[in-house]
Amino acid sequence: MTEVPDASERYLRQLGEGLQALGPEESAEIVQEVRSHLAEATAEAGGDLDVALARFGSPDDLAKKILEERGILVENPAVPPAAGWRRAVALSIDVLFWMIAVTLLSGLGLGILPWLMYASPRPLRIVVSCVYLAVIVFLLGRRWLRPWTRSCYQSMGMQVLGLRLVRVGEKTRLVRAGDVAGARRWGVGRIYTCILTLAVLCGVGYYLYQVVWVNPGRDQQAAVQGVRNDSSEAVRVVSEAYCLAIAAAGPAEPQLNDLYVPSARGIAQELAGRHTAGRLQCYTILSVQLPDYKWPGPGEMGRPSGQVVAVIQVAESGSDSSLAGAYDYTLVRNVHVTRSGLTTSEWFGQWQIESVKVEGS
Image (cartoon, rainbow, N blue to C red; front, side, top):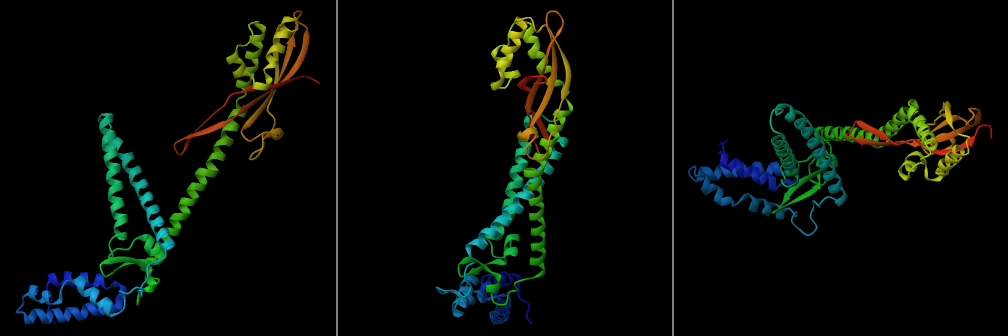
């Protein structure tokens, strides 16, 4: 068989792309037939390939003519476009893989660049990092969008949904691979891509489950336990309330906000009144109790999760140093957790006096 030059190979390859709607078997047969005719035409033209190609016309026009002969280019084509939901799902899968690739490569680069440029000025490191991110986003975006614009490529999302781009005349059309005559619905490549996509979706779902559900609860529980392990701050709040009463200065408005919940501010006036009456000259912290905290769900005594309670017993002595009474102070602390980054969490909140009752009442 006569060898066909490289220029004709490009012609035949472009013709094959234009005949994809016919299926791989029929399009390959047509390309092979055209190859033979082209070799014969080249021989008749004395080896002048340009003259031989001019007889066939452009590959796009020839492909369009062949499709018209087979009823592809009509109002109700034999290879209809794929459903919109299939296009949307395929594009979503591609975007997901693109985001994962950008995240991994960006994290890798931003972790290495500061180490390589540790001696460089900070503005230069920022500029280099931004340029690196822009290049990564551009290159990966170009790589992931190419299958949606050229019929010779097939993206991962297209493989999972069984779609492919075919040229029909002058346009490309996203169709179901099963609608193309002779095309296989399932192949090794599609099975592998489906398994990979399923594994990635499971990994992403597990990660989101950890970040959104498990980690916040774990951080909250750790914060509550940390507060319960250190009750000295609750003792300090009670001591400060007594010191202000004994000093006869009376708590100022900011101190009331720090030491008492809004509904318990009257306790400060009661302390000042007992001191004025001589029944409070000194005090002694007798005990600190932390009721059992239930996790998860509501805390002790039906309180919301994240609210820790401490009960501090205080003995008061009058001006004659005799025991004037014992009081149980209930303090609460609402523990709030904030996250800085993916793994670091911080918690805050302050103890406040909520109520008081006379011991034994």
